[in-house]
Image (tube, rainbow, N blue to C red; front, side):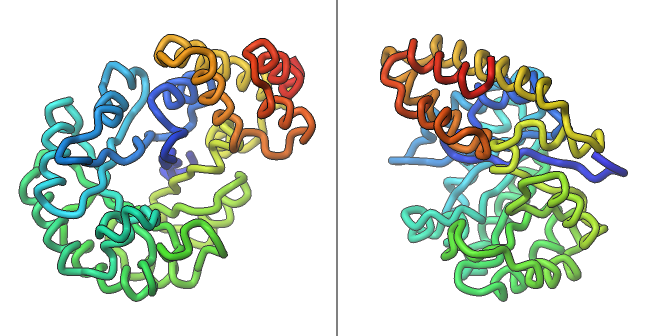
Length: 314
C-alpha cells in the first residue's frame, strides 16, 4: 500500500471462503481487509454455509468485512443482526452481483434500475444499524451507466464508509471491457472514499488505475489475487517476489488449504479432490498447460499430489 492507497481482497463465490482467506493471510497478505462472499437468505433463513464462513473463529488473524446481498429491508436486517451478534463493526452491501437468477429478483446489480428500492434498502440499513460502518459495492448499472450516476446523490448523502465501483454493466457479467470513462464520471462526483474494482491482474494495472484516478482510496482485487496471491504484497513492496520464493509460498498455501479441507469436508476423497481442483481454476494461469491439465485430470489423491508437485516444481 502506497501513501494510504489500500488494496482489499474482493470476494468470489466458491473460492475465497474462510479457509482460503486464512491461507492467503498467512502466506502472502498485503491486503487491508478481506470481504466474505455475500451472505444471503434462502427459504426464509440465512444459509448455514454463509454463517459458518463468517464465524470469527474461522477468520482469525485477518481483517474480515462480511458482505451481504438482499432485495429488501427485512432480509437485510435479518443478516445484519447476525453480523452485530458476531461482533462485526463493518458490513458491505452487494449491489454488483450480475448473476441473472439473483438479479431477476432485484438482488445485487438487478436492483440498480430501481432507485426507489435502493434508497429504501440503504436508508433503512443506515438508520437501523448506526453501529455498523456500511460500505457499498456496485456496478455502473444493469442496462446503463446512468443508473449509478442517478444513485450518487443518495450515496453522497448517506453515512457510508466507502463505495466500491466495478465499471461494467450487470448484463455484461464479466464479458467485454471495463468502461473507464463511465467510472471517471462517477469518480468526479463521488464524495465518499472510492475504490476501483475490475480487471486488475498485475501491479502495473493497479499503478495505472491509481495514476489515472489519484483520489482513489484504493482498489478491490479479486481474480488478480486468485491468479497471483502475491499481487498485493508485490505492489506494496514495489517489486516482484523471486519466483522460487513465490512458488514455495504457493506450495505452503496449498498444503494449508488441503489440510483444512481434509478435516472439514465429510464426503471422502472424491469431494476433497473436487474442491482442491477448484483451487487451481485461477491460480498460475501462465503455468505449463500440460502440468495444469494433469492436476485437473487426476482421479486419485496420489495422482493429484504428484501433479501438483509437477506444476509447482517441487
